[in-house]
Length: 116
Image 1 (cartoon, rainbow, N blue to C red):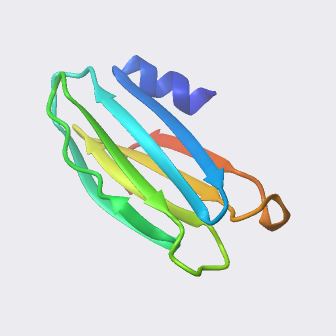
Image 2: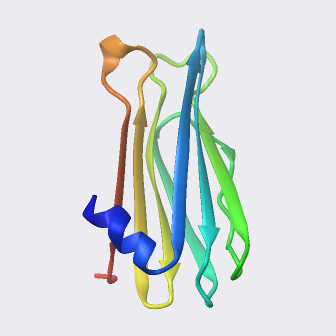
Image 3: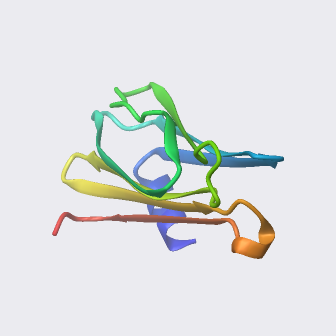
């Protein structure tokens, strides 16, 4: 809740959806930039899965969507983290979308702070 409140204070809106069915396990993340500065996409680190469509930089008053999914024939869904920079701050997004409920739970964590 604190991270979401902090993000709201700087004019950032983040929503996500997790869709699962059969072997099609994926997550979509939407970020709207309500600030006056560009949000820069720094990196995506995947533990499991693959990038369906990569995150991009977001100019003021614009929005962006990025997505992840499980790999074909993989035994796990998707798990990873994305890092963005907003002025002199860092936005960190972590997700876990298991293949089945037996393999874990859906998780989404958002942290907002300073580099280092």
